[in-house]
Amino acid sequence: MKLRYCFLLLFLFLRIHLEAENLRVLIAGSADIYPDQIEGTAVSLKYVDCALLNLKGDLRFYRGIQLDLSAPAAFLAYRGYLALAVYNNLVPIPGQTIPPAGVADLSANQLDFEVLPNKILNTWQIPLRAAHGLRNSPYVTILTDTVDMQTFPILFRLMPVIKGISEEMENMVFTLNIRPILSDEGVIKLNFKYPEQMQGKPVTVFLDDVLIENPGDEQLLKEGEHHLVILSEDYRNQSRRFMVERAKILDLLVELEDPTPLLVFEYPEAVRIFIDNQPVNNPHLPYPVDPGPHEVRFQMSNYSITRPITVQKGKTYKIALSVDVNISEND
Image (tube, rainbow, N blue to C red; front, top):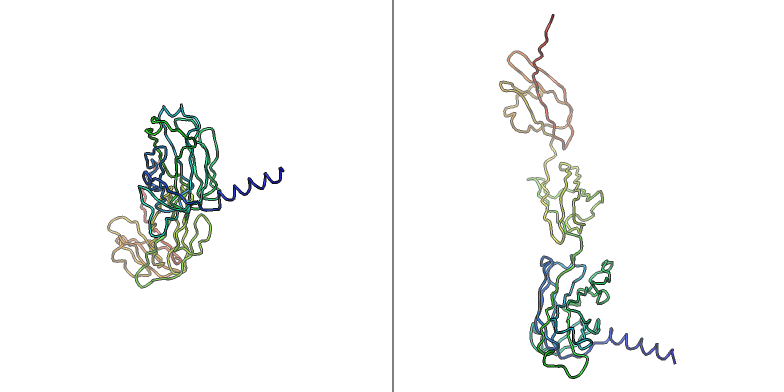
């Protein structure tokens, strides 16, 4: 007998969660949920109404959604009168569409059904990804198992569970506020700008010391500071830090540079500069040279200082001439 009872419960459970139900519902309004609308969207419901919930924006940023149902104070006198149900995989009858408001005939899979708790404010959360981290608490109830985001829109429904609803109950207005629960992640998109006549040469990209196989693809990263390194035989190596914001896409411009070594000079006025005995005509600008050994000469009237330097590809060198004045006192 107990075994038959267990099989009956299992059958009912599978039927609720796997079989589509044919429904005629009254949709009071639709709520479009966006990752950047943290305050949420509200829909007003009566005791026989439904709300159509749509996910919008970048689905990668959703961890779940939160439903806050506010009831009027008079509802506390009606314990056990109402229930809620949640459905996904909504399919309208052939030849029709699901309206944002109004009567709809459709089939759907029921995700949850329970008597509405007798409170002024009820809060539920619906997880939308594996390892969502959402937990039940005295203030929040996890309403369903993880819901596939591809099965949205979903339907939130209020319905009576007893006969003889009073006129007071019929006139009650409930407010359902729906807001996103976001992951602690953002996206970085690398955009490479190449030097003229040096297009499309290979680069090696590391994000937080991890090699990125396809640097042209968007990368999902935890919010906060990250480290980017660009290595190449054809361009200058680069290293920079950047910030990723929650639920934001960062377009990061990477300007690839010619790897020709550069010399940058610091010097007093009235000084002439020579590289390998050739005058530097505009020493205020970085001076390109070939990799290898060179000789730098600073010429001040009849006085000159010469220094050797060996430069490497892709590097910049600062060469500074300083003139000191030493004062000493003799007894």
